[in-house]
Image 1 (cartoon, rainbow, N blue to C red):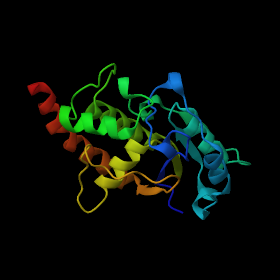
Image 2: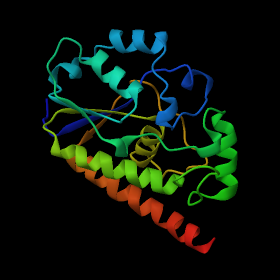
Image 3: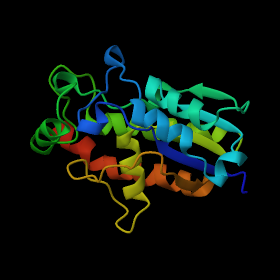
Length: 204
């Protein structure tokens, strides 16, 4: 197994994600539901045995997923809040479609009502957190959230771009496997993608 490898996965199912409700606030830190816990405990791909370090976001659901995947092993695990899900402001707890409609109209550089960060700023934060995972020994496991998973998959896909208005949903527990060089290129491409959103925000 190549030690210069990152396995980026989305946490397992929660009661919110099962209903496409958004949760980006630690004040309403939604844990895995029974199905999510069972799926995490049952998921045993061969690559997991080679993982020597793990990083999660600050949310309970990512830590629960990591602990279930690595059960019985002494793999160092830490958290980086830069990997946290985007804050949804007044859309917190509601359907993703409501936030998505607002995002399409307001633009990626806009901060939602009651929120503290734009889609652009949240993605930039997550990309920086992902890049710093390279400081961990590899192979490494990174358990994050749907937005980072969706953006990363789009950036490594044939289009090489990610539009916040129409991102495919990241699957639970399905790894995006990145060499260190691929991860560095992904983050660089992500920041290039975000440059128009910076200009868009400045013009508003």
